[in-house]
Length: 342
Figure (cartoon, rainbow, N blue to C red):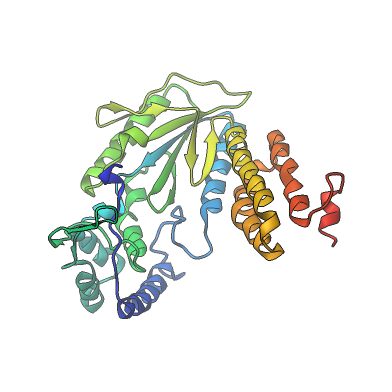
């Protein structure tokens, strides 16, 4: 186990959460009101009425539009390193007046994020030991597991689009960031990438955030009418790795948008769900089987269906509808459509 994989979760009192909720509602009314519209439209995370599917649709739609116009399309999938835990309190507080947050409301936020303490407790049940570290003052980050923390992070990263202005379409979902660059001309494309890389580096340094270079990739999208070019992207003198596919918001996206990898991964999960349902069927009730179906099968099958459902490989998923026959106890020859009529 790597200690850097762990994140601190704030243990807040019930009264604190009630106060947070009230403050969060007022702040959202301020940021999301039609007259203000202070948060950028390309941020899909932690916003009412928006989900990961909306961010994915924005990305894939822009990619397909560029390819249909015979333009080059490259997307950089950024992996921010401990983004929520790296928010600088002084920088966050300095940004609030630009959004009309001042006076008493700003003092409330100052008292909320500052003067917090944390410690680490390790309980070893095998050795019957309990080790606790000393209390340490928290100098960075928003309280994770809180109600107000996600909104404060959106405010902290809201000026990202104002810095990255050079022919890009950013798609943000909290700290998951994809930067799409399109260009009709191959000659100046590499120069555009260099300019954007410099702007990225400048913003991350100014906001005391960093990219995980080992988990940041870029994909050059192609179709039958476009071809790949020998392009390179560097960040802090390190070359960003180019890949043919990557995972973005729970979906595997490849350079041709065929969704083949995502379908294969989903098929494996769904087969495991079928086996689990078949194994427990003799011992549990029908309601329990339905709960198992919705948690292990239905959630996997329907996620991203809007995108991969049209693929020729999607038949591999739809063939697994046999799970309905397993749940209902029908013979193999029974049509699945008949099961829904009962």
